[in-house]
Length: 126
Image 1 (tube, rainbow, N blue to C red):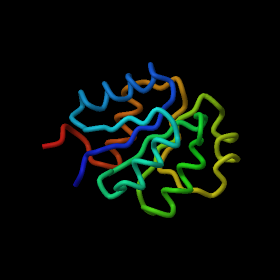
Image 2: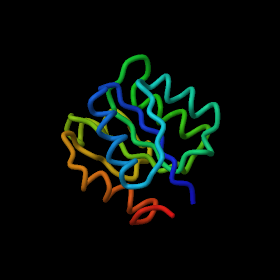
Image 3: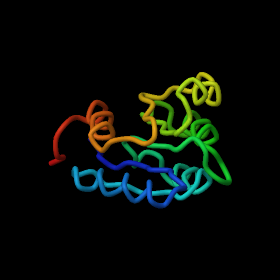
Image 4: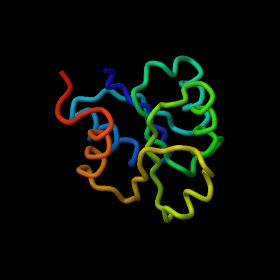
């Protein structure tokens, strides 16, 4: 199974932390700085991603817009949505779009790895 993740996060510090935690755990990641860049990566080859971790609020296209593209180009791609907003608000913004988990900000590295591990399998990829 692929261990390549798409990260869409406009906060450069948070994006860096996401990348470092996941790479240190053995995953490969592609970081998009906003929703439109994430959509471009999905349109260029969504099948290369095993999972997406999306921020809700981003410039040019938000997490809900990226979820809509995922539903079209790669339905079934596991998505973790992360936000500093309460989960109820996030779910009201995304409607019935399926996500495998909500990761509240600020998150702990262990929480991120737990969510990713539940979907892609625990431990360092071989």
